[in-house]
Image 1 (cartoon, one colour):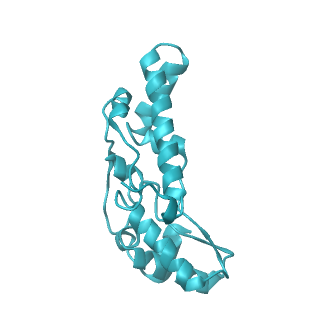
Image 2 (cartoon, one colour):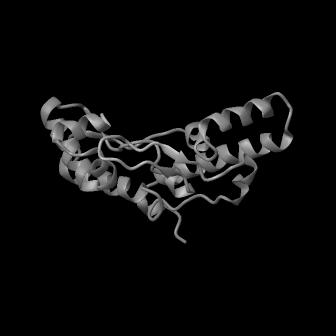
Image 3 (cartoon, one colour):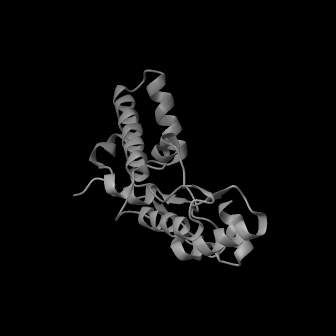
Length: 174
C-alpha cells in the first residue's frame, strides 16, 4: 500500500519517501479511491536503518534499497546507540506523516505505522548476506564473538523499534 499510493496520486517515489506531505497526499488519494479500512503510513524498511548509518539508493522511480551497510563486521555493532526517532534517519519524516494523516482522517480510519522487524533491521547493519552468514557461524558454534554481536544487534534493533513506536511524549529526551 506504500508505493501503490504514490502511483495512484501521481507522486514520484523519491518525493514519496522523502516528503511527509507527499506520503499524506498519496495515502489520502488511495483512500479516496479504494476506501481501505487501514491507511498504511510508510515508504520502505530503511527509515530507521539510515539512522544507524546505512546508505540507501535515491531515485525517482524506485524505493530505497541498501547500498552500503554501516558496518563491515558485526563485531563493530557495540559502537552503535539507539537512534533518536525525533531527529535521526527518516524516522522524523514518518512520525510527521503519521501525525498529519491522523489530523486529516481523525479517528474514522485506523493508521498502520511503518514497520520492519528487528531481524530485518539488524540485517541492514552488515548487509543481509553477511548477516545470515554471521548467524550461521554463531549457530554452528564456530565463532562465539559473532553470537554475542548478533544478540547485541538484535537488541539494538528491537530497542530502536520500541523507541520509534512510543508516543512522542514518552520518547527519550537527550
